Image (cartoon, rainbow, N blue to C red; front, side):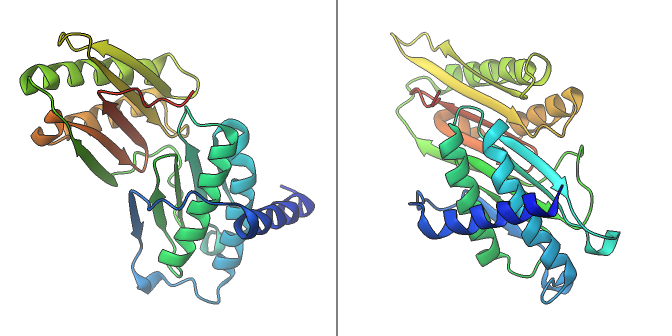
Length: 243
């Protein structure tokens, strides 16, 4: 990665953070490492700032970017940005900028952190996490008027399991979206499954199956999102896929 390219990335990031109209939504979740691994006034923090600028620049092109930067292991951060498979490059860029700004505010000195929004995920660490399933998980649910929660649970499990298979083995982007009839009049169930693209197909399936299996019982009577550091699922009784 050339110095001129990295410098340009930093300029673009600074310009975006100052001028763009960010969506202003709160993150789904944020996790920071403990303060004992402080990056204050360190070469690690310098490398991290450059890496974050580069990932912000690269992520909107393919919806995903990862990389590391540093002269030695002690100074080397590893970072990753993933945008939802259905969002535009513009929305991906906006979310990545928002995530970069907020993670610096919320986790100013930690050597590892993760932040997730509806449209994107950003994480970094001083340890190489590429290709490993991240156990960080967060779920959120919206109350709806499902008349048959037992059927809803069965259909949710069926649809998400199908999408987990499709995302893992039939998609170069480890992403899949689809719908299924709920057999309640004309109602349909909509779903989405996605993994970070550093995972293998086998580990993507394992991550998604674990996320689906860990959904609490209350989730199946409500629309929900379950997002983690390596994969996510969304299901709802209204269309939500953006593209």
